[in-house]
View 1 (cartoon, rainbow, N blue to C red):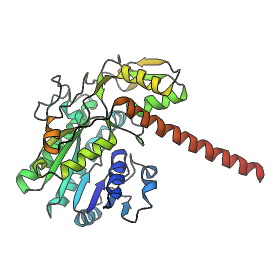
View 2 (tube, helix red, strand yellow):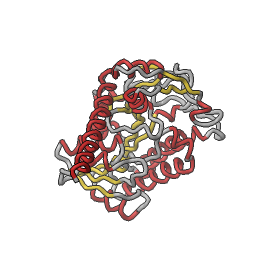
View 3 (cartoon, helix red, strand yellow):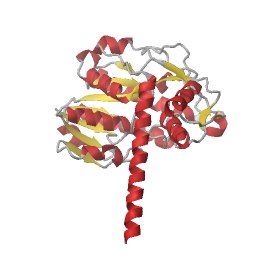
View 4 (cartoon, rainbow, N blue to C red):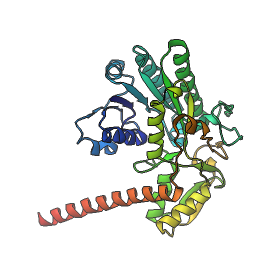
Length: 338
């Protein structure tokens, strides 16, 4: 089969492409590299079944051509990361809402199946955990740019479901919960790569707020497995489904676990949200998914333990450091011999 992945050079997109190529499929990647990176897909260039297009989904002509060639579209392109959301709310809303509408419109011409990536952020300040897909969405005030991302992704879901109901455009919506693993960057505030990088550097591991807020982290390989199973399940069409792990840990607990797994002597420090992001910043205290619907539709439930996930991220960072060191040593030797 032939698959189109928007945001294909991103963290999740690159892992999804890797999995599809390993299964013998053909993959079309579209990414403007605003948050993605060529480094994420460099190792995939060896596949003649991989084709990448460095352009925005706002290029309607190219998007239409790629959608027309694909059997299934994975729409992962989005503005992501708390820091980016707080600093660039206009970009967040425009990228997410406009991009999703363009993809759905192009796909609806021939009713190509679209997987729309949503987020656990849409649950907002709901305190009824675990979060079920039919739960109320409780967002904060519009004066807090923090909630612009959640609102934009909720609108993405409304758009997707409206295309399904009104135009019979097949869609599957996945609400992703804190997906982590190799190749994820901490540039936009992702906690796992930031903690690991700080621990390996021997720098203070910075925990925002009290550290008692909790999250559930899902290995990217298992998130990809869940996504692929959902698009292969006819019962999932027109559905919203949580994708994630339900193993809960506080941010303070995660910092201690990372410190333990890296053998780091880094101190753990606490930074108020107002200093980390913006005055009056609001966060969710807990974010735990109900996985009953995912398991019912696909028979799949993520099983990777958090220590295993942390170890994979640590190994990735250590490998990158070894490569950088080797390149530096090679250049130094070449300079000395010239």
